[in-house]
View 1 (cartoon, rainbow, N blue to C red):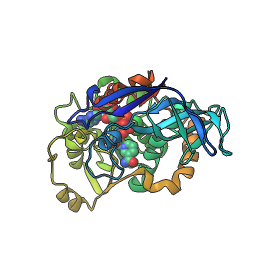
View 2 (cartoon, helix red, strand yellow):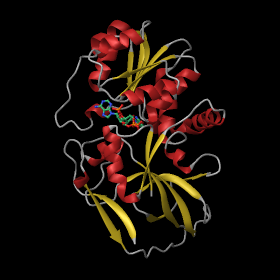
View 3 (spheres, rainbow, N blue to C red):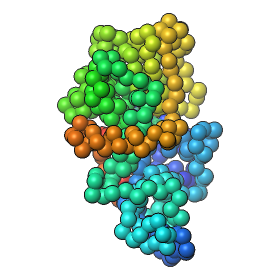
View 4 (tube, rainbow, N blue to C red):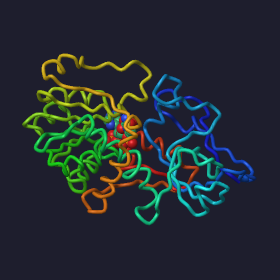
Amino acid sequence: MIQIINLKKRPVGMPTLADFELKKEDDNLKTADGEILLNTKYLSVDPYLRGRMSDAKSYVPSFEVGKPITSGIVAEVIDSKNEHFKKGDFVSGMLEWKTKQISKGEGLQKVDADKVPLSAYLGIVGMTGLTAFLGLHEIGKPKEGETLVVSGAAGAVGSVVGQIGKILGLHVIGIAGTDEKVELLTSEFGFDHGINYKTTKDMKSAIQKAAPNGVDIYFDNVGGPISDAVLFSINKFARMVICGAISVYNSTELPTGLSVQPFLVRNSALMQGFIVSNYADKFPEAMKQLSTWLSEGKLTYRETIVEGFENTPQAFLDMMKGNKKGKMVVKA
Ligand code: NAP
């Protein structure tokens, strides 16, 4: 039998398991000319999927209710009638939440299981690693000695942003949601300071204390009150990379907060939205540098691996709630 996970209904507020449905179908998949048969090995669960579950206009189309969810997947080619792929190859790309599926191979990249573990192609040497590298370089424009603040710092993107900041000689402050994660920021990822936003009463003062010279780059993964607090510390010509806003992804009302304009004008500061796919021409160069740093031991990464395809919705919910460290992936 093949297992499939569909979007059952559009979530309202924080998604629940009732928004997904697990289906089973007979396994009678057969490849035609040009096709490959794929066996899912690892699935990525990411915050942007929440946006695709709603029907609001965005930079990627919404999922259809009653149809499978898609995300980054690493799969093994188990049969091929496509000259570009052979049985035993591993591929990574956007695929459906199915244990097995047919593909024409379009948009799939071959990945090498001997270089890094397969799951890493969904994280550090995949979409989230590229997001960290390109967001920081293309909008953050880091210079040695500057101060970088990262929110969502113990997550897939944030933990890599902070480490790259340290490689480039920045003073790096990370904001995360548990003491254990804050400890990880300094002990494992080399950040200079960590702040627990859930237990810190005055985030504005905590950021000012951790960044006595002010903030030159803010890599924003979360938006909301955390990002409002950072605004009080930005320096002249600060750059704010707006990578994500997970704190408002489940809002049922239009989120409100500080007016950013006075902060931007006063500091001649830049605030720019970032979408990694806009920088596709730079992926090879970024991937090369990430792989080099990884092999040199300058970069490290954490994964939380959930076992069992059928647990993918729960893994998605846990990721959204912060019940994991580093990159959340599912081993099918
Ligand atoms: P992640 O950080 O690994 O996981 C999400 C984390 O967000 C959770 O673990 C949780 O950690 C934190 N979080 C949840 N609710 C929060 C809240 N209300 N306030 C503050 N933090 C909250 O996910 P990721 O894949 O690395 O993505 C991080 C951000 O980057 C997301 O906003 C995502 O949409 C964005 N992103 C953007 C692009 C792009 O191209 N623009 C690409 C990839 C990712 P805590 O325990 O610390 O709360």
